[in-house]
Amino acid sequence: MKYVLVTGGVVSGLGKGVTASSIGVVLKACGRRITSIKIDPYLNTDAGTMSPFEHGEVFVLDDGGEVDLDLGNYERFLDVTLTRNNNITTGKIYQSVLEKERRGDYLGKTVQVVPHITDAIKNWIESVAVIPVDGKEGPADVCVIELGGTVGDIESMPFIEALRQLSFSVGQDNFCLVHVSLIPVLGVVGEQKTKPTQHSVRELRALGLTPHLLACRSAQPLLENTKEKLSQFCHVPAGNILNIHDVPNIWHVPLLLRNQNAHLSILKQLNLLDVAATPALQDWTRMAETFDNLTESVRIALVGKYVGLSDSYLSVVKALLHACIACSLKPSIDWIAASDLEDDSARLTPEAHATAWETLKNAACVLVPGGFGDRGVTGMILAAKYARENKVPYLGICLGMQISVIEFARSVLGLERANSNEFDNETPNPVVIFMPEGSRTHMGNTMRLGSRKTLFQTPDCITSKLYQNSEYVEERHRHRYEVNPEFIGILEESGLKFFGRDESGNRMEILELPTHPFYVGVQFHPEFKSRPARPSALFLGLILAATGQLEAYLGRHQNGS
Image (cartoon, rainbow, N blue to C red):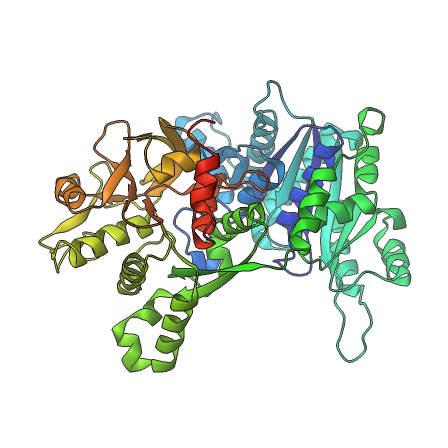
């Protein structure tokens, strides 16, 4: 197994995940099979209980793993299906070591960070690296490892040491280190500064790891004298200093690496030059350039709770992008804080309230994504009502589906206090209830998670036609509340149809309003399986409906054809 380690220096948030994904794309284009591992040095066992405001979205894998959003980047860029074990955290490592200690596996030895924690990290990496993730048999050729955080962080020290030992044990022909760093420009002087990167590399070398390549992040392309300076003081050949400057969209990053012959430097270090082909990135180039040249746009109202940080809905944003590009459109996302639509906001912050409603009314479609807790729920209900009554295309995901059920029960059935048990445990009309198998005492890994099969009740519905499958669809889930089966009869009698159910037939998965051009709610998260060349069917349907193209599209693409 060959390893490419991507570390970061100077500051966090430099785009190590995109860099690691892009390295994988270029090596895959050279004919190599790629797998990925993300190391997160935090103590949480996984990302499942972390706030989207603090850490961005929680990405869900097929096997139910709740992981860092960077694994979403890997899946989208490399078109692979990862497992929960491809995300290593300090919490997972310590938990596994302590479980062994309790079983007596260490035979009375004193359990220490070195060698026990570092050995556990190495063993985890080596065992996960050989698991195929691309649907083919046998292990991949190269494993790209991203170390989260910044070199020098106390919490990442055991991982640095483990990776140093790994580089020594696998040999120099099987290990390549790419260090991502920042080249800032001081406003007054206007000079590209290399000193932060010099210090970062010095810190890394002091810990026993020497970078083979530098990936320098900057606003503008690096000057030649900046490269020479970095080469001289960081002990890296000038040809191995890559410049990842700001680009119009992130799909240009693999092309930037290719144009600077990053693949040749990495393949040479890994002794793979003889067996690698010229990178075939024609489709990737076409995709990046197509996006740059789009002129027409579509306005999408995204009504959510966490709109203050776009990374909270990263996969939703990417899925919208994939769908829009398939329709030759640029997505114009209007972020609306759900609470700004509420009546309380009209009294407390009238300007924000007026702006939110104006934005909603100017949008071509409405999307209500997932979320937890009662903040902003009233605003989401108002958005769903507006979309339903005004025939505006609507897609509700997870919570967004439950919101549409609550709104319909209140407005159409006249059940004024209809609600979810999540928001009102005393409601006389609980149209959304806590799932029987859920845990009320433990939050982590206790939801209905991962890929599940949804059976279509009829092929004659928009969702089935969009998926081009009359029988079923498999999508990823992350929820602990569900639509109350006791209300299905009365809801369907009034026009809200549940066209998708789980294999038991009792759990509602897909709802539609047949009298509406496009009013769809799904309990699953279709955004997690969206890919640049294969947009999610439901996101594509939303954009097609918003631009008046849905009927023609469905006419051309009948079920299974």
